[in-house]
Image (cartoon, rainbow, N blue to C red):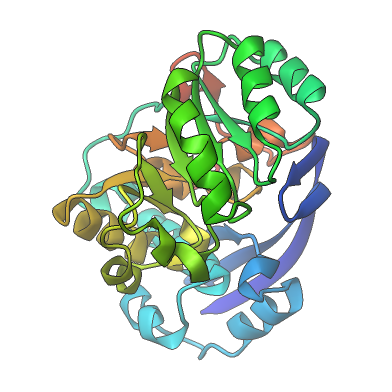
Length: 321
């Protein structure tokens, strides 16, 4: 089995800003696994928030043995970007070897399109209202917030897109006091979900706090081991392949989270269609899908995912799966 890791850069359509900083491009790692003349593909997005870099993730993959199964991979690498790219490439490889789609191999129903959120970058209220107005035709908007002065931004987005559903992602940027002050206004403004309002290390403050709209764990939820730490704090878990370490663990996390009474959101880092492709299978039937990475890019893979009024469609075999 031969594994090749290649860094790739995709320019963004515009500057993308969250509470932790801004970027103008998506830097990803493309993994190719060749075995017996068949090639599987995967992509990951190393994330500095989790102490990952392009070099560190490449080194993790380079340290793997020369041959292993997808099941064996789960104990060879920890949950994270490196395992994600390899896991997804192995799923693709298995599908091509078997002549069957990944969803069938995984025992999943045939996938269809899912409505996805479209993310509005953190900016001034005026610019965020303009972003909202330009995208008011979209059924679901996700707003990047995470400062002490977010109320005018939220009001501006609602004014710009009066009919769209809204979810908020604070990216750990609020204090308990800021969230408590904003919470009563969320219902009035039609907010459907608040994602990671507090830093992961400080989210015990959510216990006993009024949650007028559902609160979603993102940075606080990585894989199944995270679930025991979420009780009394969160209503929803955001599953991302780069956190779970691939589709294999993500499917198990979704099953366990639903069994424990959580709703599920399927999200993404900012990557190409290759990174989103496996997540479209995971997103079937969940309460919120946020797989808009390709919509934020100025350039994408040769066989990109298809987006239309029905949402994000599952990949064609030429892309993945």
